Image 1 (cartoon, rainbow, N blue to C red):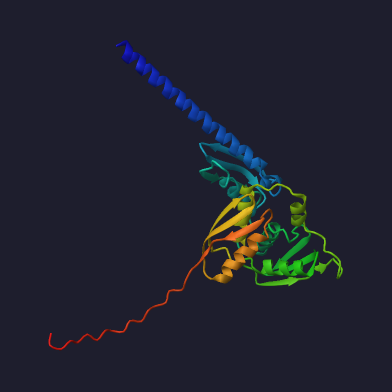
Image 2: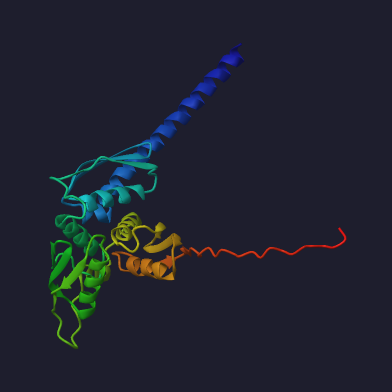
Length: 279
């Protein structure tokens, strides 16, 4: 009887210790998730003016507060979703003020500016974006003709944009080295950009570009090296995805493992003549 009681007590004690350790581990993971989110590059730069609270319980992260726009809401969710230990994200963030209706001029201004913001070779802060009935006019200074052309290309690839008029002036004189953009300066200074932030920026970039928004793409980042998976309709789509992702802040290199969907060719079958005499 005493042995049985002792064994039961021992089992209960071990079980209690196990549950306590599991609970403690889960609590530490949740604390790490909340801390990592606030210390991430996206939260420290793009979202620093927003009021975002991150709470995690057993790996389920809940986002509450207000952000300045749709892009910030998406960035916050994607960043937190890619943190170690996160199993799901409940995004309850609200946009400040009234969100512009889809495809209106105000909506397009926000989309074009957000698209420029994620690329290292463009200067979103120094580019003025004006939209009138779907026609986008870009003004400001470009560091080079290549940057000006890139601005036109990226603006044209925003869903809803009809025409792009690029009135930007090229600041650098011919033969002189162009001034580095903000993104290039960040890379030169060696500012650490965490993998979760890079993944979030890449996913949002692909989402905001018309040519890649519908791509079935997976994104994984390890030490700044981005690996793309999924499917592309053709080689041009795959190459474009590589180009866009390569130009995102913090990306060191891109490994594109996307497969190209092969067009299904209908085979025409000729009926077999199998008349066998004598059967």
